[in-house]
Length: 476
Image 1 (cartoon, rainbow, N blue to C red):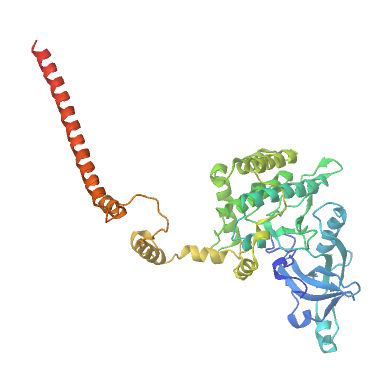
Image 2 (cartoon, rainbow, N blue to C red; image 1 turned 45 degrees about the horizontal axis):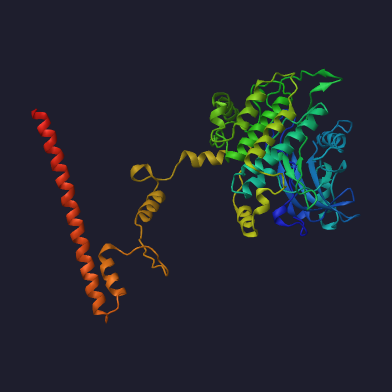
């Protein structure tokens, strides 16, 4: 990573973690560390460090040696028998960046091309000659993805942060769909905050590798069915059923994202088991999405989340979503809760120690193969003691049940003393040398006792007379 980039605003990789598109087989795109430090792309961009990698390419932080500007470069290796006239993946993705360049939340596009990397050191010339050709795309450097920020904030966003993100995310997808385009891979990893003070409050949409057309010359395009297109955890039900997608499906994936942010998890996460084929994982996740009621999925959340998901699931393939309706619904919730769109997100309120601790923690990825490791822990729970509690929980209950009572003496306590101490306190307040006062106090106390005794006797006489009167009346 570039030394001028602080760790809390680590740049984001525009990556595809798992290769799910049938026409994009996974390829190894990562340069070795020895080559990385001396690699210059197209005699202009020097690679300084790797940001992220996946089946669709690797993303590096780089420096423009002409302007000294820090940028992000996505590299993807080309097949050995590559047709020069064929439109490459990154070339196609560059076209979308160019098409959307004037829209907010779109990273600035600088350049793209293809050529083998050049190594400045002569000692690596032999390696250079044997290295495969790469295609590259140079874009604006962005901040952390929403997924990484989610981890930093303890695997959950506050309702305020979730609602502020919802407003921008709906707008990004609306602009995308207004160009007759579908993203088809909406997930937290494919959205990032801007880099720097000016753009740090803006949400950017990333990774156009699976973008497809929905309308062509004003007519609906019924795209051919795919085996699968998207990411298992976030894909709409239509994608799981191998159906063509439309704008409603991007918004369905967005609904899963917002529920994930507000709840902290989704029910189908962690359902990948070791050595299980991805087809079985996908089938299990599909069954869960179809079987779990929306109200159960959105339990303990404001009704806006369930209404969002129910609405987009009710739309047909050709129906145009009402983006303004969704935005207004979340804005009304913001108003009812008394929140303000002040641009202060959860990660902005973390101190340096919290950011460092969060960055040091393990970061779960949403790709199904990587999540098989989580299922291993779910399959082998910790040893349990009596009552179904784990050993750690039992120890905590044993220690916490022995409560200590601490008496604290207050300096100025106006509360009355205990009954046994009241007489002593009255005597203590009385002057010791005043004999007449003592005698008067004792006489007054005796008189008070006599008055109370007489009052009780009077009450008894009254009750007896009434009882006799009633008895006599009964005899009559």
